[in-house]
Each structure stands twice: as C-alpha cells, then as structure tokens.
Image (spheres, one colour):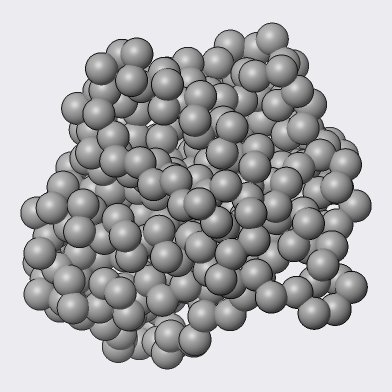
Length: 330
C-alpha cells in the first residue's frame, strides 16, 4: 500500500458521455511516506490531511483518495463517480469543492478511483466486448475490503454515508439498502432509480458500450435476470426505510452553469439536457414509490440544471448538513 500527498486542484467542468451515444440514448448513466499493506491494530483516525492509498482487493490494488476527518472522528462519507469514471482520479476530487467543503468537519471523505461502467456492483463475469482482464467486484470492495482497511486507520465500519451522481447515485442507494450495518446515510444526485422502466435496460446497454465497450450481460445477466431487480432502487425501496436519504435531480433546463460557446459545447449541453430529463423522470417515479411506502427523504428538484458537475457540486453543499447530522460528525 502506498500513500502520496497531493494538493486539491480547483474544480473544473467535465461533461459526461460521448455526443453520439448520448444523443442516441440519453443515459450516462498527508503526510506519510511509502507504506506496506499489513494488518495493523485499529487506532484513532488521523486528524486532517490528505492521502492516496492503494488498497488491496480481489480486483487488484484500488486507488482511493482520502481526506481525513479534521478532528480524528470515526465517520466516513464515500463519494461514487459516474459512468465514465477515470482510472487516475475520482471526479469529486477535482470537479467539485468537496475537499474544501468538508475540510473542517469531523468526517473522512473516501473517493474510490476507477470502476467505469461498473455501477459499483459485483459482476457475474468479465466483459467480453473489451476483453476485460478482471471481473468487477466493486460491492465487495466497498463493503468488505475497503472498510477493513479504513478500520485500521480509525474509521468505523458502521458510521458511514454513501452518495454518488448518475451511475453512482443508483449504486449509492443499492449499497446502502443491502448493507444497513455500514451506512446510515445515502444520497443520489441525478441517479437512475427506476431501471426496470420501459427502455431503461436497453439504454443502459448502449451507454455501457459507449463508456468503455462494457457488456451489460457480464454485469447483471440478461434483462430478465434477478440481478436487475436487485439493483433497481424502485424495486428494493422498502429496504431503505430508516436511512437518512437525500435525493435530487434537476429539470434539464439550462441554468447558471450552462454557457456553451463552441459547437462541441452546444452538443454536450444538448446531451446533458436529455440525460438530466431522464434522471428526473426516474427520480420522480422513485419519489412516488417512497411516498407510497411512507418512507421519508429529503428531495431537491431545482427548476434549472443539466447533467453536469457544477450542479452536483451544488447539491453536495445542500446536503452537507444532513450528512453531518446523520453521522454525528459536526
């Protein structure tokens, strides 16, 4: 396991999805030196600072960006990336001001790196379309292997929150629903929360081919597979009862952060409009489902906003207080 100190870079805008695929289907969906990965006794978490850790997993070493709780608290917030997650950095670390937002709070930020098109799931097999060398086992990593490492650094296994955008929003609810002993808070920003709705499975298939040539059948099997239902927030909604929930999606109408200038900008903005409109439809259906079950949640439906990072950074700021309260991390 290695650690490297880095400074936080200012947020910059990154659009999701390639234009062609997005138009076809609007879904996209510190301070220490080198160290060795050995089991060490649990201790109080480091007070503040930033590290990059390479944590062992069944997929091989996974890079994790970590900002430690300012006063050594045991709470942690996992931030999940979108469909086009990069292999060098988690986009929450540079597309938003997440580090600055929580720098003085008693909560550790945990940003796993990688997982393009994974939905942060345990897959059935490797993807044959892109000759994937290792089968994704992201649920295992995020709920077993990574918590085991964080526990050696003083982070609780039972006082955590998880949130994400788009693909990561759907995954955050899935992880929280099936690992209630680990998570007390779950948040979805522009997530796809009704994936059994007509057309959604086909859209996910096309989006995953676009994002890395991944085969959805390797993830959850054919569309009628039980794994699809297990990972559909609309279906497993009853399992969310008792969690602190924050759910948001904007209208898709361009807002304050949409300032296209070049032809590519206009194409990307058009894509982001469609993506967010689809996320809103999914999220509104999910809201109806929770309401029918009598499960409360905090909802945010801005009148303007597209499927893009500045709006998700804004939602993170809005949900900060709820996160800190749920994890007793003020």
